[in-house]
Amino acid sequence: MIGYKQPCRYCEALVEPSDSVCPMCGKVNPAGSLRCPVCRNPTRRQWANCSNCGISLRLTCPWCEEETFLADYCDHCDARLQVVCPNPKCGAEQAPVSDTCLECGRAMK
Ligand SMILES: [Zn+2]
Ligand SMILES: [Zn+2]
Ligand SMILES: [Zn+2]
Ligand SMILES: [Zn+2]
Image (cartoon, rainbow, N blue to C red; front, side, top):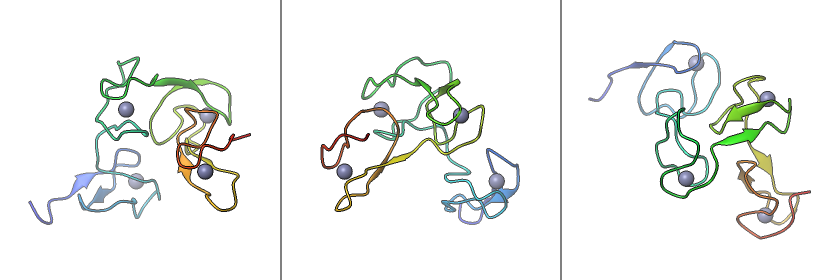
């Protein structure tokens, strides 16, 4: 299947399956299926919770405050659904699913 291109989920440009970022629109994971941002289990838009780790797949976007499906980007404002740990020694990115950093345990706010 090497070289078999697939349409980007966001802009429909053809991308290599191995591309982690779309060269046209710059979004991550352009050819992949929807995945849980915490455990990377494949998810479906109809689901309320991840079937693997059980987190809620509905959240309020921290940027526009609309309810969105938990994926790589907000359905409404297109913002990337990632927050960065404020600990300067950590700086891990994670989905906005917890008040504490999943890496170092520090409060996110
Ligand atoms: Zn794209
Ligand atoms: Zn999960
Ligand atoms: Zn939003
Ligand atoms: Zn951290």
